[in-house]
Amino acid sequence: MSPIPFKRLFAQTLISAFLSFSTFFIGFLRVYFFSKNLSMEEFGALSLLLTFSAFLMYVFTLGTYQFLFKSVNEGIERTSSAFWASLTVTILISLVFIITIILFNNSISKWLNLSLFKRELVLTITGTATTAVMTLFLFYHYGLGKNNFQNFLQFLRGSLWVIISVFFSFFLKLTLLQVLVVFNLCMCIILLIAFPWKEWNLLFPFKVDKDAFGRLFKYCIPLLPYFAGVWGIPLIVRTQLNIYDGAKYVAIFSVAYTLMEIVFMFISTITATLSPYFFEEQTDGDKPALFYNIMLKYSILAIIFIVPFIFMLRYDIIQIVASEKYLVAGDYIPLLIFFPLLRIIIIVFEQRFLKDGKTLYLGIIYSVGISLSFLFAIFLIPYYSVYGAIYSSLGSYAFIFICLLIRQRGMIDFVYLNLWGLLKITLILTFTVVILNFFDFSNFLKVIPLSMVTLLSLFLSSVLTKKEKEKIFSLIKIKNRN
Image 1 (cartoon, one colour):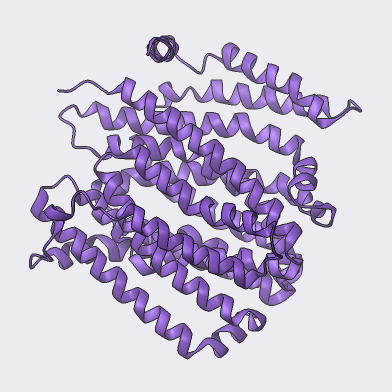
Image 2: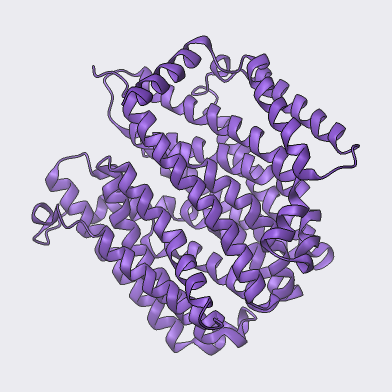
């Protein structure tokens, strides 16, 4: 029985944290740059097209990247078969969608209320196809335990096209079409970097055993609603908002939603770092449960610490990263603060089903979740506009959360989580934010007492056990000596 690799986990966590902070910064840069350099209609269209891309990436792969990730440690023959089966399915589906959008572009664009952005829609589909193949390679490396390399590529996937667009904006005024050309080129570059060159001799030649496709479809088909639902819910909501109110309202909704989405993506790196260890076959049955509860505890703790700062600074952040014309988006953030909490708990809960191959249940609840988001959007958005979009999103995620919680209770160590301690921290920070709102001075100055209370509350609440504190301090000492 091998010991839990705390030192390696600590090093990977530090690198992941650095990349997360970088992604965090790039996320705000993306909102800042595109909201100021594109019209509200173009920015709204870009937000909608990027959501299409994220949604279709799962459809193009059918979730085969998760199947490949799970198969990497099952021996070279099964790994090679899983690799080629996943790649074949992804390429075929991508080609079908590319041909479809080229042949029926006029009808599809009109239906989506994107008639002014036909070429942009085609570029979105082609870029998504490249992203889908590249994601397979990323998860192949991820399954091999190359967390740092995979995290770096994930960072490039979300940031490189933004950085290059910002660079070229100093020399010419970029249009939405040109931005999506840059997006396509960057996905091709990352695809080449992610290609498994070193393992190619082991994976080549093309060979798929007779049951490889059967194993793939058995694992992935039930998961299709799950993978589609991850981005399908925001896609449905934004599409309906665009149909009823237009791209301008999508832009306002996207500014508020994206700020909270950045928070979620930042904190999800905790699960991303620990997930490969949770998926490893362990002779010690307690290890997977330990990693599971660590993911859950520290993800919730991170949300509790970050959200009060976002809430307090929401109008200042929007004014800095966007402009005054988007300030109204700050009105919606108090409702949206529940989004990262629900999503981060859901993503941890999902690991149990993915590890055990129980994909049918995930598929069922996400099918219902997507259906609910569609029904909510149809009835709520025409009457409540952006608020209706928020209610539709939160209602769908709340349903998924409850369904997963019901089946997860036996896996959760409530004593280790120290729910009372987490609640105390939440109450202390909430009370602090309320009190600070009565003082008439800069919100940025209020960050100082809020930060002090945050650290103090962590100490007083005893959320971290004595053993956890000792382990953290010992890892810091090890890092300092190196």
